[in-house]
Image (cartoon, rainbow, N blue to C red):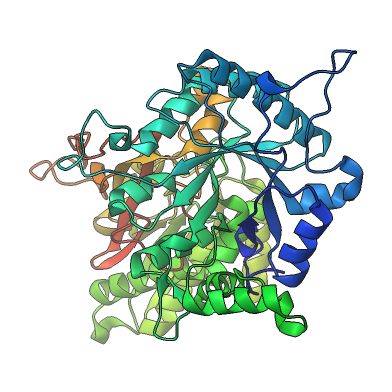
Length: 588
Protein backbone atom coordinates (compact mmCIF):
# COMPACT_ATOMS: atom_id res chain seq x y z
CA UNK A 1 0.00 0.00 0.00
CA UNK A 2 1.66 3.29 -1.07
CA UNK A 3 2.55 5.86 1.58
CA UNK A 4 0.00 8.24 0.11
CA UNK A 5 -1.40 9.81 -3.01
CA UNK A 6 0.73 12.78 -3.98
CA UNK A 7 -0.43 14.36 -7.20
CA UNK A 8 2.12 13.87 -9.95
CA UNK A 9 4.35 11.43 -8.04
CA UNK A 10 4.52 8.01 -9.68
CA UNK A 11 8.02 7.14 -8.49
CA UNK A 12 9.15 4.23 -6.34
CA UNK A 13 9.58 6.53 -3.33
CA UNK A 14 5.85 6.03 -2.66
CA UNK A 15 6.59 2.51 -1.37
CA UNK A 16 8.12 1.62 1.99
CA UNK A 17 9.83 -1.65 2.90
CA UNK A 18 10.87 -3.42 6.08
CA UNK A 19 14.02 -5.36 6.93
CA UNK A 20 13.25 -8.80 8.39
CA UNK A 21 15.13 -11.63 10.09
CA UNK A 22 15.70 -15.05 8.53
CA UNK A 23 12.56 -17.16 8.41
CA UNK A 24 12.08 -20.26 6.29
CA UNK A 25 8.32 -19.61 6.20
CA UNK A 26 8.30 -16.93 3.50
CA UNK A 27 4.50 -16.88 3.03
CA UNK A 28 4.17 -15.95 6.71
CA UNK A 29 6.86 -13.23 6.31
CA UNK A 30 4.89 -11.62 3.49
CA UNK A 31 1.51 -12.04 5.19
CA UNK A 32 2.71 -10.52 8.48
CA UNK A 33 4.66 -7.60 6.99
CA UNK A 34 2.57 -6.77 3.93
CA UNK A 35 -1.00 -7.82 4.56
CA UNK A 36 -1.08 -7.07 8.29
CA UNK A 37 1.36 -4.16 8.62
CA UNK A 38 0.94 -2.39 5.30
CA UNK A 39 4.55 -2.47 4.13
CA UNK A 40 5.05 -2.79 0.37
CA UNK A 41 8.04 -5.15 0.31
CA UNK A 42 10.47 -6.97 2.58
CA UNK A 43 14.25 -7.11 2.75
CA UNK A 44 14.56 -10.79 3.58
CA UNK A 45 17.63 -12.98 4.16
CA UNK A 46 17.76 -15.79 1.63
CA UNK A 47 20.12 -18.10 3.49
CA UNK A 48 20.30 -19.40 7.06
CA UNK A 49 22.80 -17.07 8.85
CA UNK A 50 24.44 -20.07 10.53
CA UNK A 51 25.52 -21.51 7.16
CA UNK A 52 29.25 -21.64 6.35
CA UNK A 53 30.47 -23.55 3.28
CA UNK A 54 33.59 -24.78 5.06
CA UNK A 55 31.52 -26.43 7.81
CA UNK A 56 29.05 -28.26 5.58
CA UNK A 57 29.33 -32.01 5.28
CA UNK A 58 28.57 -33.29 1.80
CA UNK A 59 26.60 -36.44 1.05
CA UNK A 60 28.02 -39.54 -0.63
CA UNK A 61 27.56 -37.89 -4.01
CA UNK A 62 29.57 -34.84 -2.99
CA UNK A 63 26.59 -32.46 -3.03
CA UNK A 64 24.75 -30.39 -0.44
CA UNK A 65 21.31 -28.84 -0.06
CA UNK A 66 21.72 -25.17 0.75
CA UNK A 67 19.56 -23.91 3.68
CA UNK A 68 17.59 -21.33 1.73
CA UNK A 69 14.35 -19.82 2.99
CA UNK A 70 12.03 -22.36 1.41
CA UNK A 71 11.81 -23.45 -2.20
CA UNK A 72 10.94 -21.17 -5.06
CA UNK A 73 7.45 -22.68 -5.04
CA UNK A 74 6.38 -21.23 -1.67
CA UNK A 75 5.64 -17.91 -3.39
CA UNK A 76 4.43 -17.13 -6.87
CA UNK A 77 6.94 -15.63 -9.32
CA UNK A 78 5.14 -12.28 -9.12
CA UNK A 79 5.39 -12.28 -5.32
CA UNK A 80 9.12 -12.99 -5.40
CA UNK A 81 9.78 -10.28 -7.99
CA UNK A 82 7.42 -7.61 -6.60
CA UNK A 83 7.61 -7.99 -2.84
CA UNK A 84 11.01 -9.47 -1.92
CA UNK A 85 14.46 -7.89 -2.00
CA UNK A 86 17.08 -10.46 -1.12
CA UNK A 87 19.37 -9.69 1.80
CA UNK A 88 22.82 -11.17 1.29
CA UNK A 89 24.35 -12.62 4.48
CA UNK A 90 25.78 -9.74 6.58
CA UNK A 91 28.68 -11.82 7.93
CA UNK A 92 30.43 -11.86 4.55
CA UNK A 93 33.92 -10.36 4.57
CA UNK A 94 35.53 -10.78 1.19
CA UNK A 95 38.64 -8.81 2.14
CA UNK A 96 39.31 -10.62 5.40
CA UNK A 97 42.86 -11.67 6.25
CA UNK A 98 41.37 -14.97 7.41
CA UNK A 99 41.59 -17.08 4.28
CA UNK A 100 38.81 -19.49 5.33
CA UNK A 101 36.41 -16.63 6.05
CA UNK A 102 37.34 -14.93 2.79
CA UNK A 103 36.78 -18.07 0.71
CA UNK A 104 33.53 -18.87 2.55
CA UNK A 105 32.37 -15.34 1.83
CA UNK A 106 33.14 -15.58 -1.89
CA UNK A 107 31.37 -18.92 -2.19
CA UNK A 108 28.30 -17.80 -0.25
CA UNK A 109 27.98 -14.54 -2.18
CA UNK A 110 27.88 -16.39 -5.49
CA UNK A 111 25.42 -18.97 -4.15
CA UNK A 112 23.01 -16.36 -2.82
CA UNK A 113 23.11 -14.20 -5.94
CA UNK A 114 22.55 -17.29 -8.08
CA UNK A 115 19.50 -18.22 -5.99
CA UNK A 116 18.15 -14.68 -6.09
CA UNK A 117 18.54 -14.63 -9.86
CA UNK A 118 16.71 -17.95 -10.04
CA UNK A 119 13.83 -16.37 -8.08
CA UNK A 120 13.78 -13.38 -10.49
CA UNK A 121 14.22 -10.92 -7.64
CA UNK A 122 14.48 -7.31 -8.76
CA UNK A 123 17.28 -6.52 -6.30
CA UNK A 124 19.60 -7.85 -3.62
CA UNK A 125 21.03 -5.92 -0.68
CA UNK A 126 24.80 -6.44 -0.29
CA UNK A 127 26.40 -5.98 3.13
CA UNK A 128 28.66 -2.98 3.68
CA UNK A 129 32.42 -3.50 3.24
CA UNK A 130 33.92 -4.48 6.57
CA UNK A 131 37.22 -2.61 6.58
CA UNK A 132 39.07 0.21 4.92
CA UNK A 133 39.78 -1.81 1.75
CA UNK A 134 37.25 -3.51 -0.48
CA UNK A 135 39.19 -4.47 -3.61
CA UNK A 136 38.41 -8.21 -3.53
CA UNK A 137 34.77 -7.54 -2.64
CA UNK A 138 34.48 -5.18 -5.62
CA UNK A 139 36.25 -7.69 -7.88
CA UNK A 140 33.77 -10.43 -6.98
CA UNK A 141 30.76 -8.16 -7.38
CA UNK A 142 32.07 -6.93 -10.72
CA UNK A 143 32.41 -10.53 -11.90
CA UNK A 144 28.85 -11.30 -10.77
CA UNK A 145 27.46 -8.19 -12.47
CA UNK A 146 28.80 -9.36 -15.82
CA UNK A 147 26.47 -12.34 -15.65
CA UNK A 148 23.36 -10.55 -14.35
CA UNK A 149 20.63 -9.52 -16.74
CA UNK A 150 17.97 -7.52 -14.88
CA UNK A 151 18.62 -7.78 -11.15
CA UNK A 152 20.01 -4.78 -9.30
CA UNK A 153 22.59 -5.00 -6.51
CA UNK A 154 22.30 -2.46 -3.68
CA UNK A 155 25.47 -1.94 -1.68
CA UNK A 156 24.68 -1.06 1.92
CA UNK A 157 26.64 2.01 3.02
CA UNK A 158 26.26 3.73 6.41
CA UNK A 159 25.87 7.51 6.19
CA UNK A 160 28.84 8.50 8.31
CA UNK A 161 31.19 11.46 8.02
CA UNK A 162 33.48 11.59 11.06
CA UNK A 163 34.78 14.75 12.62
CA UNK A 164 38.41 14.66 11.50
CA UNK A 165 39.48 16.58 14.59
CA UNK A 166 38.05 14.03 16.99
CA UNK A 167 38.50 10.73 15.19
CA UNK A 168 41.55 8.55 15.27
CA UNK A 169 42.86 8.48 11.71
CA UNK A 170 43.89 4.85 12.18
CA UNK A 171 40.48 3.59 13.24
CA UNK A 172 37.96 2.05 10.87
CA UNK A 173 35.34 4.61 11.89
CA UNK A 174 37.50 7.42 10.53
CA UNK A 175 36.82 6.23 6.99
CA UNK A 176 34.55 8.52 4.99
CA UNK A 177 31.86 6.11 3.81
CA UNK A 178 31.27 8.14 0.65
CA UNK A 179 34.91 7.47 -0.21
CA UNK A 180 34.28 3.79 0.50
CA UNK A 181 31.43 3.76 -2.01
CA UNK A 182 33.44 5.76 -4.53
CA UNK A 183 36.35 3.31 -4.31
CA UNK A 184 34.00 0.34 -4.63
CA UNK A 185 32.22 1.59 -7.74
CA UNK A 186 35.47 2.64 -9.42
CA UNK A 187 36.71 -0.93 -8.98
CA UNK A 188 33.45 -2.23 -10.49
CA UNK A 189 33.77 -1.75 -14.22
CA UNK A 190 30.22 -3.06 -14.79
CA UNK A 191 28.30 -0.83 -12.40
CA UNK A 192 25.17 0.17 -14.30
CA UNK A 193 23.25 -2.32 -12.12
CA UNK A 194 25.05 -1.33 -8.93
CA UNK A 195 23.32 1.14 -6.62
CA UNK A 196 23.50 2.32 -3.02
CA UNK A 197 21.28 1.59 -0.04
CA UNK A 198 22.05 4.21 2.59
CA UNK A 199 22.02 3.23 6.25
CA UNK A 200 20.58 6.26 8.09
CA UNK A 201 21.94 6.36 11.65
CA UNK A 202 20.88 8.42 14.67
CA UNK A 203 23.57 11.03 13.99
CA UNK A 204 23.98 12.65 10.60
CA UNK A 205 27.03 14.19 8.92
CA UNK A 206 27.23 17.78 7.71
CA UNK A 207 24.84 19.04 5.02
CA UNK A 208 27.48 19.07 2.28
CA UNK A 209 28.36 15.45 3.04
CA UNK A 210 24.70 14.43 2.80
CA UNK A 211 24.23 16.39 -0.44
CA UNK A 212 26.88 14.28 -2.19
CA UNK A 213 24.64 11.23 -2.04
CA UNK A 214 21.94 12.84 -4.16
CA UNK A 215 24.38 12.79 -7.06
CA UNK A 216 24.81 9.03 -6.76
CA UNK A 217 22.68 6.09 -7.81
CA UNK A 218 20.82 5.68 -4.51
CA UNK A 219 17.84 3.31 -4.58
CA UNK A 220 16.98 2.95 -0.90
CA UNK A 221 17.46 4.59 2.50
CA UNK A 222 17.39 2.21 5.46
CA UNK A 223 16.42 4.01 8.65
CA UNK A 224 16.89 2.15 11.92
CA UNK A 225 14.35 2.45 14.69
CA UNK A 226 17.19 3.71 16.94
CA UNK A 227 17.28 6.86 14.79
CA UNK A 228 13.76 7.84 15.85
CA UNK A 229 13.06 10.19 18.74
CA UNK A 230 10.03 9.90 21.03
CA UNK A 231 7.30 12.51 20.97
CA UNK A 232 5.21 13.63 23.94
CA UNK A 233 2.69 10.84 23.36
CA UNK A 234 5.35 8.13 23.30
CA UNK A 235 5.28 7.57 19.55
CA UNK A 236 8.31 7.62 17.23
CA UNK A 237 9.27 10.78 15.34
CA UNK A 238 12.38 12.12 13.64
CA UNK A 239 14.61 15.14 14.17
CA UNK A 240 14.28 18.10 11.81
CA UNK A 241 17.49 17.10 10.02
CA UNK A 242 16.31 13.51 9.59
CA UNK A 243 12.96 14.77 8.31
CA UNK A 244 14.72 16.96 5.75
CA UNK A 245 16.83 14.00 4.62
CA UNK A 246 13.80 11.71 4.25
CA UNK A 247 11.96 14.39 2.27
CA UNK A 248 15.01 14.69 0.03
CA UNK A 249 14.85 10.93 -0.50
CA UNK A 250 11.21 11.17 -1.54
CA UNK A 251 12.09 13.89 -4.04
CA UNK A 252 14.86 11.75 -5.54
CA UNK A 253 12.84 8.53 -5.99
CA UNK A 254 14.61 6.81 -3.09
CA UNK A 255 12.59 4.18 -1.22
CA UNK A 256 12.51 4.14 2.58
CA UNK A 257 13.10 0.90 4.49
CA UNK A 258 12.41 0.50 8.23
CA UNK A 259 14.91 -1.65 10.11
CA UNK A 260 15.34 -2.82 13.70
CA UNK A 261 13.10 -3.61 16.66
CA UNK A 262 10.42 -1.46 18.25
CA UNK A 263 12.15 0.72 20.87
CA UNK A 264 9.46 3.30 21.72
CA UNK A 265 6.95 3.06 24.58
CA UNK A 266 3.82 2.94 22.46
CA UNK A 267 5.23 0.44 20.00
CA UNK A 268 6.36 -1.84 22.85
CA UNK A 269 2.82 -1.88 24.19
CA UNK A 270 1.55 -2.88 20.77
CA UNK A 271 4.18 -5.60 20.53
CA UNK A 272 3.22 -7.02 23.95
CA UNK A 273 -0.47 -7.06 23.01
CA UNK A 274 0.35 -8.87 19.78
CA UNK A 275 2.29 -11.59 21.59
CA UNK A 276 -0.14 -12.24 24.45
CA UNK A 277 -3.63 -11.74 23.04
CA UNK A 278 -5.72 -12.68 20.09
CA UNK A 279 -8.19 -10.45 18.31
CA UNK A 280 -7.79 -7.28 16.26
CA UNK A 281 -4.83 -5.94 18.24
CA UNK A 282 -2.90 -9.19 17.79
CA UNK A 283 -2.43 -8.35 14.12
CA UNK A 284 -0.84 -4.98 14.89
CA UNK A 285 2.74 -5.00 13.62
CA UNK A 286 5.24 -3.57 16.17
CA UNK A 287 6.84 -1.43 13.43
CA UNK A 288 3.54 -0.03 12.13
CA UNK A 289 3.92 3.27 14.07
CA UNK A 290 7.25 3.85 12.29
CA UNK A 291 5.60 3.18 8.92
CA UNK A 292 2.76 5.54 9.85
CA UNK A 293 5.24 8.29 10.66
CA UNK A 294 7.09 7.87 7.36
CA UNK A 295 3.70 7.97 5.63
CA UNK A 296 2.89 11.18 7.50
CA UNK A 297 6.11 12.80 6.22
CA UNK A 298 5.24 11.75 2.69
CA UNK A 299 1.66 13.02 2.88
CA UNK A 300 2.84 16.33 4.36
CA UNK A 301 4.74 17.15 1.17
CA UNK A 302 3.18 19.57 -1.29
CA UNK A 303 1.85 18.14 -4.56
CA UNK A 304 4.29 18.33 -7.44
CA UNK A 305 3.82 21.65 -9.25
CA UNK A 306 2.59 21.48 -12.83
CA UNK A 307 6.04 22.49 -14.07
CA UNK A 308 7.75 19.60 -12.28
CA UNK A 309 5.12 17.12 -13.45
CA UNK A 310 5.80 18.26 -17.01
CA UNK A 311 9.56 17.83 -16.48
CA UNK A 312 9.44 14.35 -14.93
CA UNK A 313 10.06 12.57 -18.23
CA UNK A 314 13.06 14.77 -18.96
CA UNK A 315 14.89 14.38 -15.64
CA UNK A 316 18.51 13.20 -15.99
CA UNK A 317 18.04 12.40 -19.66
CA UNK A 318 20.77 13.40 -22.10
CA UNK A 319 19.49 15.50 -24.97
CA UNK A 320 21.57 16.89 -27.81
CA UNK A 321 21.16 20.67 -27.84
CA UNK A 322 18.90 22.19 -30.47
CA UNK A 323 20.65 23.67 -33.48
CA UNK A 324 17.95 25.78 -35.14
CA UNK A 325 20.47 27.44 -37.44
CA UNK A 326 21.43 24.09 -38.99
CA UNK A 327 18.16 22.19 -38.48
CA UNK A 328 14.53 23.14 -38.96
CA UNK A 329 12.67 22.58 -35.71
CA UNK A 330 9.65 20.28 -35.57
CA UNK A 331 6.10 21.23 -34.57
CA UNK A 332 6.39 19.37 -31.25
CA UNK A 333 9.48 21.40 -30.30
CA UNK A 334 7.73 24.66 -31.10
CA UNK A 335 4.73 23.54 -29.06
CA UNK A 336 6.92 22.84 -26.04
CA UNK A 337 8.38 26.33 -26.20
CA UNK A 338 4.99 27.96 -26.73
CA UNK A 339 3.54 26.33 -23.59
CA UNK A 340 6.07 28.27 -21.51
CA UNK A 341 3.85 31.22 -20.58
CA UNK A 342 6.33 32.78 -18.15
CA UNK A 343 8.99 33.26 -20.82
CA UNK A 344 6.64 35.22 -23.10
CA UNK A 345 5.29 37.24 -20.17
CA UNK A 346 8.86 38.43 -19.56
CA UNK A 347 9.34 39.25 -23.25
CA UNK A 348 6.07 41.20 -23.26
CA UNK A 349 7.20 43.18 -20.20
CA UNK A 350 10.51 43.98 -21.92
CA UNK A 351 8.81 45.17 -25.12
CA UNK A 352 6.41 47.30 -23.05
CA UNK A 353 9.31 49.08 -21.36
CA UNK A 354 11.12 49.53 -24.69
CA UNK A 355 8.05 51.04 -26.36
CA UNK A 356 7.46 53.44 -23.48
CA UNK A 357 11.08 54.58 -23.64
CA UNK A 358 11.03 54.78 -27.42
CA UNK A 359 7.77 56.67 -27.89
CA UNK A 360 6.66 59.48 -25.51
CA UNK A 361 2.97 59.71 -24.63
CA UNK A 362 2.38 62.75 -26.82
CA UNK A 363 3.58 60.82 -29.92
CA UNK A 364 1.84 57.53 -29.12
CA UNK A 365 -1.00 58.03 -31.59
CA UNK A 366 1.15 59.08 -34.55
CA UNK A 367 4.60 57.49 -34.26
CA UNK A 368 4.99 53.95 -35.60
CA UNK A 369 7.74 51.78 -34.08
CA UNK A 370 9.43 49.30 -36.40
CA UNK A 371 9.93 46.03 -34.54
CA UNK A 372 11.64 43.01 -36.06
CA UNK A 373 11.23 39.54 -34.60
CA UNK A 374 14.21 37.57 -35.93
CA UNK A 375 13.73 33.83 -35.57
CA UNK A 376 9.98 34.21 -35.25
CA UNK A 377 9.17 30.49 -35.21
CA UNK A 378 5.41 30.03 -35.15
CA UNK A 379 4.78 33.53 -33.81
CA UNK A 380 4.78 33.62 -29.97
CA UNK A 381 7.11 36.65 -29.87
CA UNK A 382 5.02 38.36 -32.54
CA UNK A 383 1.96 37.88 -30.34
CA UNK A 384 3.80 39.06 -27.21
CA UNK A 385 5.03 42.19 -29.02
CA UNK A 386 1.56 43.08 -30.33
CA UNK A 387 0.10 42.56 -26.85
CA UNK A 388 2.73 44.93 -25.48
CA UNK A 389 1.76 47.53 -28.11
CA UNK A 390 -1.90 47.21 -27.15
CA UNK A 391 -1.09 47.50 -23.46
CA UNK A 392 1.04 50.64 -23.90
CA UNK A 393 -1.12 52.24 -26.58
CA UNK A 394 1.76 52.37 -29.08
CA UNK A 395 1.67 51.69 -32.83
CA UNK A 396 3.79 48.89 -34.28
CA UNK A 397 4.99 47.72 -37.65
CA UNK A 398 6.28 44.18 -37.29
CA UNK A 399 8.61 42.15 -39.49
CA UNK A 400 8.58 38.42 -38.62
CA UNK A 401 11.77 36.87 -40.02
CA UNK A 402 11.96 33.06 -40.08
CA UNK A 403 14.16 30.71 -42.10
CA UNK A 404 12.16 27.50 -41.48
CA UNK A 405 9.72 27.25 -44.43
CA UNK A 406 7.44 24.96 -42.42
CA UNK A 407 7.10 27.50 -39.61
CA UNK A 408 6.48 30.23 -42.20
CA UNK A 409 3.34 28.34 -43.29
CA UNK A 410 2.09 28.47 -39.70
CA UNK A 411 2.98 32.16 -39.44
CA UNK A 412 0.88 33.03 -42.49
CA UNK A 413 -2.07 31.10 -41.07
CA UNK A 414 -1.70 32.87 -37.70
CA UNK A 415 -1.54 36.36 -39.25
CA UNK A 416 -4.66 35.65 -41.33
CA UNK A 417 -6.52 34.17 -38.35
CA UNK A 418 -5.72 37.12 -36.06
CA UNK A 419 -6.26 39.78 -38.74
CA UNK A 420 -2.71 41.15 -38.51
CA UNK A 421 -2.19 41.55 -42.27
CA UNK A 422 -1.79 45.36 -42.06
CA UNK A 423 0.66 45.16 -39.16
CA UNK A 424 2.84 42.06 -39.67
CA UNK A 425 5.06 41.37 -42.67
CA UNK A 426 6.35 37.79 -42.86
CA UNK A 427 9.86 37.32 -44.25
CA UNK A 428 10.96 33.79 -45.21
CA UNK A 429 14.73 34.20 -44.94
CA UNK A 430 17.84 33.63 -42.87
CA UNK A 431 18.20 36.80 -40.81
CA UNK A 432 21.88 37.04 -41.73
CA UNK A 433 21.13 37.18 -45.45
CA UNK A 434 18.05 39.37 -45.48
CA UNK A 435 18.21 42.90 -46.93
CA UNK A 436 15.81 44.82 -44.74
CA UNK A 437 13.81 47.58 -46.44
CA UNK A 438 14.20 49.83 -43.41
CA UNK A 439 15.99 50.00 -40.09
CA UNK A 440 14.45 48.66 -36.91
CA UNK A 441 13.75 50.52 -33.69
CA UNK A 442 13.54 47.28 -31.71
CA UNK A 443 15.06 43.88 -32.51
CA UNK A 444 13.55 40.91 -30.65
CA UNK A 445 15.00 37.39 -30.67
CA UNK A 446 14.70 34.12 -28.78
CA UNK A 447 17.95 32.47 -29.87
CA UNK A 448 19.05 31.67 -26.33
CA UNK A 449 19.78 28.25 -24.95
CA UNK A 450 20.59 26.63 -21.62
CA UNK A 451 24.18 27.87 -21.78
CA UNK A 452 23.30 31.32 -23.13
CA UNK A 453 24.53 31.02 -26.71
CA UNK A 454 24.32 27.37 -27.74
CA UNK A 455 21.65 28.36 -30.28
CA UNK A 456 24.22 30.71 -31.86
CA UNK A 457 22.56 33.90 -30.71
CA UNK A 458 25.70 36.08 -31.03
CA UNK A 459 26.55 34.78 -34.49
CA UNK A 460 23.01 35.16 -35.84
CA UNK A 461 22.33 38.54 -34.28
CA UNK A 462 25.67 39.83 -35.52
CA UNK A 463 24.22 39.54 -39.03
CA UNK A 464 20.84 40.97 -38.07
CA UNK A 465 22.05 43.99 -36.12
CA UNK A 466 23.18 45.68 -39.33
CA UNK A 467 19.59 46.83 -39.83
CA UNK A 468 19.08 48.05 -36.27
CA UNK A 469 19.11 51.84 -35.85
CA UNK A 470 22.12 53.36 -34.13
CA UNK A 471 20.01 54.08 -31.07
CA UNK A 472 17.91 50.95 -31.48
CA UNK A 473 17.04 48.49 -28.73
CA UNK A 474 17.98 44.81 -28.76
CA UNK A 475 15.87 42.38 -26.73
CA UNK A 476 17.74 40.61 -25.18
CA UNK A 477 20.35 43.26 -24.47
CA UNK A 478 22.88 40.95 -22.78
CA UNK A 479 23.34 37.46 -21.42
CA UNK A 480 25.86 35.74 -19.18
CA UNK A 481 26.73 32.05 -19.04
CA UNK A 482 27.66 30.25 -15.81
CA UNK A 483 29.34 26.98 -14.84
CA UNK A 484 28.95 24.89 -11.69
CA UNK A 485 30.80 21.67 -10.78
CA UNK A 486 28.47 18.74 -10.10
CA UNK A 487 28.47 15.11 -9.12
CA UNK A 488 25.95 13.33 -11.33
CA UNK A 489 26.65 9.60 -11.39
CA UNK A 490 23.85 8.58 -13.77
CA UNK A 491 24.66 11.23 -16.36
CA UNK A 492 28.36 10.45 -16.19
CA UNK A 493 27.70 6.73 -16.70
CA UNK A 494 25.32 7.43 -19.60
CA UNK A 495 28.03 9.42 -21.37
CA UNK A 496 30.71 6.89 -20.49
CA UNK A 497 28.62 4.07 -21.99
CA UNK A 498 29.34 5.47 -25.48
CA UNK A 499 33.04 4.66 -24.95
CA UNK A 500 34.40 7.58 -26.94
CA UNK A 501 35.72 11.07 -26.33
CA UNK A 502 33.20 12.86 -28.56
CA UNK A 503 30.32 12.28 -26.16
CA UNK A 504 32.35 13.64 -23.25
CA UNK A 505 32.89 16.82 -25.27
CA UNK A 506 29.21 17.28 -26.10
CA UNK A 507 27.33 19.99 -24.22
CA UNK A 508 24.10 18.15 -23.48
CA UNK A 509 20.81 19.72 -22.48
CA UNK A 510 19.64 17.99 -19.30
CA UNK A 511 16.99 18.56 -16.67
CA UNK A 512 19.42 17.76 -13.86
CA UNK A 513 17.77 16.20 -10.83
CA UNK A 514 19.89 13.48 -9.21
CA UNK A 515 23.00 15.56 -8.76
CA UNK A 516 25.06 17.13 -6.01
CA UNK A 517 26.00 20.74 -6.75
CA UNK A 518 29.43 21.06 -5.22
CA UNK A 519 29.97 24.83 -5.24
CA UNK A 520 28.15 28.02 -6.28
CA UNK A 521 28.04 28.75 -10.01
CA UNK A 522 30.45 31.24 -11.56
CA UNK A 523 30.06 33.48 -14.64
CA UNK A 524 32.32 32.52 -17.55
CA UNK A 525 31.42 34.93 -20.37
CA UNK A 526 29.01 37.71 -21.25
CA UNK A 527 27.62 39.00 -24.57
CA UNK A 528 26.12 42.46 -24.96
CA UNK A 529 23.79 43.65 -27.77
CA UNK A 530 23.67 45.71 -29.89
CA UNK A 531 27.22 46.46 -31.04
CA UNK A 532 28.70 49.06 -28.67
CA UNK A 533 30.43 52.20 -29.89
CA UNK A 534 34.16 52.01 -30.47
CA UNK A 535 34.84 53.87 -27.25
CA UNK A 536 32.78 51.50 -25.12
CA UNK A 537 33.73 48.06 -23.85
CA UNK A 538 33.86 45.06 -26.13
CA UNK A 539 30.55 43.27 -26.35
CA UNK A 540 32.10 39.89 -25.55
CA UNK A 541 33.72 39.48 -22.16
CA UNK A 542 35.49 36.27 -21.28
CA UNK A 543 35.64 35.87 -17.53
CA UNK A 544 38.19 33.88 -15.54
CA UNK A 545 36.68 30.64 -14.22
CA UNK A 546 38.40 29.28 -11.13
CA UNK A 547 37.75 25.69 -10.15
CA UNK A 548 36.60 25.91 -6.50
CA UNK A 549 38.70 24.13 -3.94
CA UNK A 550 35.80 23.57 -1.53
CA UNK A 551 34.27 20.62 -3.37
CA UNK A 552 35.69 18.31 -0.71
CA UNK A 553 36.42 14.73 -1.70
CA UNK A 554 33.40 14.48 -4.00
CA UNK A 555 33.98 13.46 -7.59
CA UNK A 556 33.40 16.20 -10.15
CA UNK A 557 31.62 14.37 -12.96
CA UNK A 558 31.03 17.47 -15.03
CA UNK A 559 29.69 21.00 -15.06
CA UNK A 560 26.16 22.33 -15.12
CA UNK A 561 25.81 25.29 -17.48
CA UNK A 562 23.29 28.11 -16.94
CA UNK A 563 22.44 31.49 -18.41
CA UNK A 564 20.95 34.74 -17.17
CA UNK A 565 19.69 37.18 -19.80
CA UNK A 566 18.78 40.82 -19.40
CA UNK A 567 15.96 41.31 -21.88
CA UNK A 568 15.68 45.04 -21.29
CA UNK A 569 16.57 47.14 -18.25
CA UNK A 570 15.34 45.23 -15.16
CA UNK A 571 13.50 42.47 -17.04
CA UNK A 572 15.46 39.22 -16.68
CA UNK A 573 15.13 35.69 -17.98
CA UNK A 574 17.34 32.82 -16.92
CA UNK A 575 18.03 29.53 -15.18
CA UNK A 576 21.07 30.39 -13.02
CA UNK A 577 19.96 28.97 -9.63
CA UNK A 578 20.31 32.15 -7.57
CA UNK A 579 18.34 34.31 -10.05
CA UNK A 580 16.26 31.71 -11.94
CA UNK A 581 12.98 32.80 -13.50
CA UNK A 582 10.22 30.89 -11.65
CA UNK A 583 7.92 28.50 -13.50
CA UNK A 584 9.92 28.50 -16.72
CA UNK A 585 10.21 24.91 -17.92
CA UNK A 586 11.31 25.08 -21.56
CA UNK A 587 14.90 25.95 -20.61
CA UNK A 588 17.01 23.78 -18.31
